[in-house]
Image 1: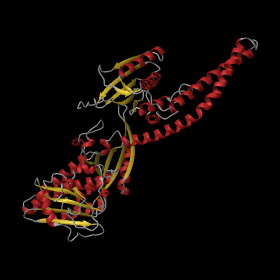
Image 2 (image 1 turned 45 degrees about the vertical axis):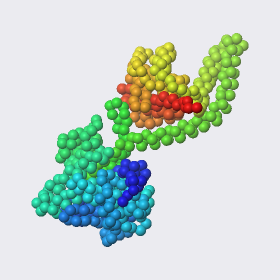
Image 3 (image 1 turned 180 degrees about the horizontal axis):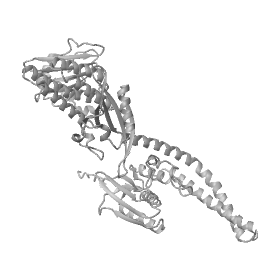
Image 4 (image 1 turned 90 degrees about the vertical axis):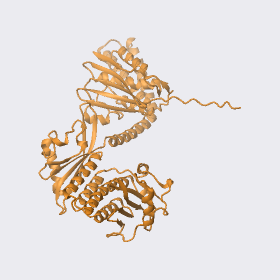
Length: 559
């Protein structure tokens, strides 16, 4: 009998497994297992097929299905590594009987003690047990034995639990078939179909299936939601090109044709932008389905939202670039500033001598005055760039303490209005009366807000509305700087926080402003994000963690 210290829920085991990056193989396994059991009417064959498929898919040393089916008796089957036929003796029957009597068994359990193992197999050091519910009661289990605990990954955990549900459904049906000859096979098929639909609907991916005539035969729940979602009843049986009319038909047809012709899985990366300017990244997979003769009869299309993964990759790359530029800036800025200061001082000195009439009043002197002015102004422009680099490379520790961000936003807007930057710019505020404090450096946050606001005004050369918005969520405060300007092209969105990248004209931007803002917000433990639609506008969002009140220390007055 399993001790309480050795019993873990499936949810706890979740955290010890290695996360599987690709859900398509799991989907394929579940689909093929469900299909292979569709016409299996004997409980022994169900147990054999589930045990064999699980051992091959999970890499376990041994997988077994054991179930007590009333009048039929004990049904059991197990496959171990390196064998092509079921194991003859693998079950410790007395332990299994104790487990079945003791276990309320509503959740999966595990054990790493050989004194508790239900299976008998050399080299076994970890056992995962998923209970089988037959007619609402636990009558058995799907058991997997591993050489080590780390081999029972998160993916293996999901596959075992999913296979247990399929096995339970199949054993429910087959036990009824064995107990009564009047059980309808068509009813069993329908139950299998519904159960498979439930599994497919539960997967966190968008999925649909087409046949050889390009007609849709399956359309899961995730394909029904979202802006591009369509109800299942309205698409089943229709031509896929008619339903997905917004996609280029030639490209879509070529993708399906390759899947039918080659029988190979094809993965395609796509990017979409909704009407609010939110960009999503998708990994779309075309998965061929074969019949028993090996012919490709259907193609499964799976769309997985990989936005978080792509953004994480971009963030890592961006951080590496920022670090490299920071190191470069710290090393060369001071060396550049010294000759720039000399050039600027010499230009000012010569300008003073020209003004004093040392060189007379000829046309050449006018040219000299113009050139000296250019030298001086360009020197100051170079100085502003190097100062920006120096600011970019600095560690921004600052004086951080809980502050109210509302007056910072309003003072930033006031400074912008005094600069008279841009024409016909209207400034709106959408700030709640009471907002939580954030732990931040006031000057640095104001620097970031002013930089974002300046960019927003520059993006509205013909006027528009600049809106400052504060949104309070659980544990997080969001400051949005929104404009109604020209927007940012989709291909530029992933590059705007990179140092020296700018869409402004030469001489009107250094490409360091957003990079500095990104560094400030990141060092505050926050996040800077953007969404934009060309010719509609852009919204920059600053996410900052809310400052939690310090707990008062308890004073011990015992003497």
